[in-house]
Length: 240
Image 1 (spheres, helix red, strand yellow):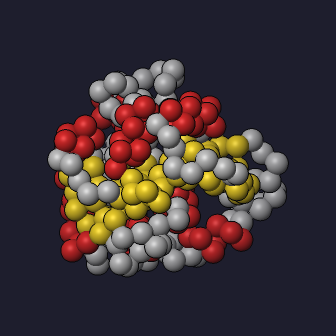
Image 2: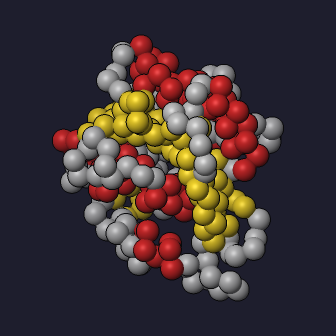
């Protein structure tokens, strides 16, 4: 059974009310997304509030907003924000993304999203977990996410998204249709040479070359975390 909380060095994420708990790939997204120079950051589908909290730690000048449509998760994220050292810079919007768009927020320098991504697999009988894990017209379709980002990013703004490789290929098509193009691709593996688990891609409005980096989480034939992982997550994980 997952812990009711995940303790980081500078903050705690309570997660009992959230379908999707803190996980390694989301932590990598939070640690490596290029947000440090951003002044306004948005976390779409914040869940526990993890990505917003990591952004607050990494970008001390930024104001961070987060959107979450699940009522229980939104309440948990709001409580996590309040309990953090950065409560005055974090704001939670408990509503669907379309409703948030209707408020006409000012443009963001960076948008983060770890969206629902299972399209064809068996759905869980737990409705909350299904909404967190599966794309659907009533949760967060890829096309809606891409369209929102194209509308509400600054001219030089960036969108960073975490998805498995097949779903990322679909998202890239929707992003291109909205005028957003990959600029950096991080490919996560368990170990060197193993199959890709997740892609973390940063999109911008400028088409061009894509910088790609292969990132095995562990050293070959070992449970030891890779050197890049220790460096990236060192400011967050208690054990590093």
